[in-house]
Image (cartoon, rainbow, N blue to C red; front, side, top):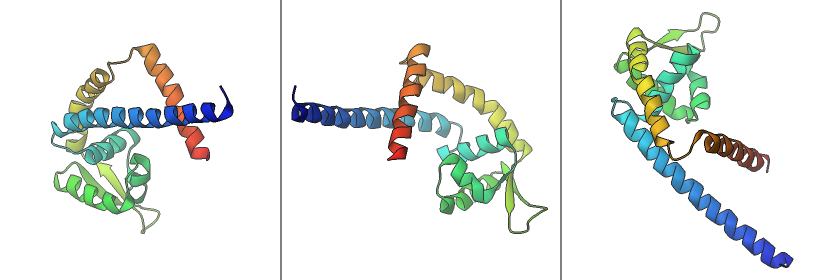
Length: 151
């Protein structure tokens, strides 16, 4: 196989891999979103509550970075969760410019109730792979992501 044929084969495989990964992610995300919606939350609200539950109070300005959401959307999500009494805002004692989001007792109770069910649903959604395949997929996805990030 000459260099041109090898390049064309690599290019075709790269395109196919992109399409397969994109479609797989869309299918997985659809199932995850449906699962979370069944608890009366959207994906972002769940992400914020899960972050606060597992990591404690967070500066509102930093939440978007941690759950991969545009900072312009965070205020809206925090407002919605505050209306539902799942979180509250607290002024930072050290810096008046910073406001923290804090999960309320109602928010903790909700996450403690739904997180185990959500973890079970994720296990079912990812059930197309066995444990060894999941480990391999994680390693390969990391390798691919790090390579793309470095370009």
